Structures are given as C-alpha cells and as structure tokens.
Figure (tube, one colour):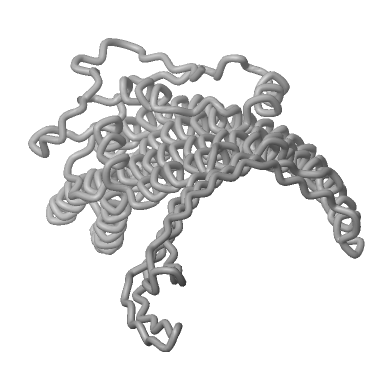
Length: 445
C-alpha cells in the first residue's frame, strides 16, 4: 500500500469524476477518460477479447462435428433397348448428414488445457496494459504540473526582479546606488523573459502529451496540496517488496504460465506416439434412375443408408518426425523454465531499485523542505540588508532566484516520489485504479 499522509485539512479533496472544464480536472477523472479514449489501452482490450476466444476454439475440437451435404444434378439420358430409343431427363440428388466425435485424442485435450492457460496470460497482459496506462497518465499529469510550476516560478521571479529593477533605478536617481545595480537587475530581467518563453513552450508540449492520452483538451489541473506530507511505503524494506515482486509481478506470472504451456507442448509431442479414436455416423439419401427391361421404361429409385463406426489411427512410422518434435519441445520447455528464473530475478532487481528510488526521492523532499525554509529566511535577510545598505542588488536577486528554484525543486521531488511509489507498486503487481484514487485524494479539487 502507498504510505501517504496529508498535513492539515484538504477541503474538497474528493474523488472527482466530472469532466467539466470550468473546474480543475483531477487525475481520476482523466484516467476514466483515458480508458475510453487511449488507443493503446483500447487495442489491449480488443486483444484480450480476441485471445479469450482461443479457449472456445480449442473446446470445439472436443465436441461433435456435424455436417450436412447436398448434391443436385441435371441428367439427360437416352436408353437403347429392344430396338427402341427412349429419352429421359431427371434431376437426381444426394443428401448426407455426417457426424464425427473424437473419443480419444489426447493432443486435443492438451490443446484445450493450454487455451485456458493462454486465457490467463491474456488477462495478465491486459492488466499490464492498465498498469502502463496508469503510469503513462500519472507521469504526463505531473509533468504538466511541473511545467506549470516552472512557469509560475519564472513569473514570480520576473515580478521580483521587476520590483528590484524599479528600486535600483529609484536608488540610482537619488544617488544611493550605482548604475551597476540597475544594469544587473536589467540583465536578470532580460534572461527571465527568455526563460519564460522556453517555459511556455514546454507547458504547451506537456499539455499536448496528456491530451494525446485522454483524447480531449485538458485545461486546468487539480494541483498537489502544498501541505502534502509523504510517508514511507509500507512495508518499508526492500526485501519485503522484492518478495512481493517475485510472487506477484505480472511478467513473472506470465513466465510461469508460459512454462506450463511449454509443458503442454512437450506432452503433445509425446502423444504423437499414441493412437486416436473417433466415432463416425453417416446418413445418406441417394436418388438413382434404373431402366426396367420388362416395361421398357426408366424409373427412379431412392436409396437410404445409415452407417455408424469407429475409426482408429495408429502411428507406426513418421520418418523420425515425432521423436524430433519430442526433443524440440523438451529444449523449449527448458528455455521456458530459464525464462521463469530470469523474470523472477528481474522482478527482484526492479523492486529493490524502485524501493531505493522511493527512499531517495522522499529524502530529497525532506532536504528540500529544510532548504526552502532556509532560502526564504535568506531572502528576507538580504532584502532587509539591501534596504539598509549592507547588501547590494545582486545579493537580493541571487537569494530570490535560489528561493524560487528550491520551491520548484520541492514540488518536482514530491511528484517524483508519487510516481516512484506507483512504479514500486507496479513491479510488485499491486498497481491498479485504487492506487490512483489514493493519489487523487491528495489533489486540491
């Protein structure tokens, strides 16, 4: 579970499912839109439906197979007998109803069991697609918030530099400051204008990125509350998360199912030595025309036949192909077993790496909160010192820039911590819409 706590009250932090663009759009509302509009997720849903049909197709091989056949012809016959020539025209037909039922086909049964396993693999693949959507949307959401924070920080810095520039001009006019202070403030202002242009471009790019996922325009986003406090994940040990990843990681589960499917293929290859037994039943109705020598006329004759039987096929020699297939599938089974071990190790490494990422980002948040308080104090001190003449203008500008940068970096560190927590859950196979709801509760609606 995510360890998330909010210091203070967050009025109106409720699950927002509205898509009304007059109010901020929150993460959960955008996720619901993305499930409807994201092409990658919709393709995964269609793929799931297609893959689940494999089981029905495999089961059909175990059920009776009934076919109806019909053949209708037009015949023009001439009969020569007893010195006479008789012309006859008719439309004979043959109608058949054939039933086949597999009685002993071990390969068909094994294929059906494999299809059930393939269905489970398909469900895990779709769950993986849902996790990918959560992560893609969350990254795009917080990237857009970070771009908004960058622009807001530059605007604040621009406003502060404008104020400092005006103060430097006023002090220069009365002889309390040198022209250097004015020029330094002007240079900072010009640089900030250039940074503002770049920040607006980045904001537009981030907005396009999230709009591509949700499939519609995105205006104002619900922001993370400044008072949000993030706590450590539970459990708070790397080994505990690694154990969960070894058991629940989606790719590891898929590898285990793939090993079972490979075992089925190995069994099917061995079943190539066994006989097969089918039940067949057939009903045939045939219309025939026979010449009657006594009357000298042709007449129609209908023939009905019913056949029921057993058909057995016993493989005797296939040129060594069956033994070759047995060896081939044995090698592929060994490969699948190694893939299970590889997936387990990768999941373990990814879980520990993700846990370290969470720990590092949370430590950065704590350090930046301390740095922000220090930067704010330093900014106030430099402004006071400048007013009484013991600090120059550049000192104030540097302190303002440091404060804005620290404020921006703190927000980014919080965003990174939330994303890292979701990535940790994904590696452990626990990420779902409920995880998104927990983060959504931290947003100011």
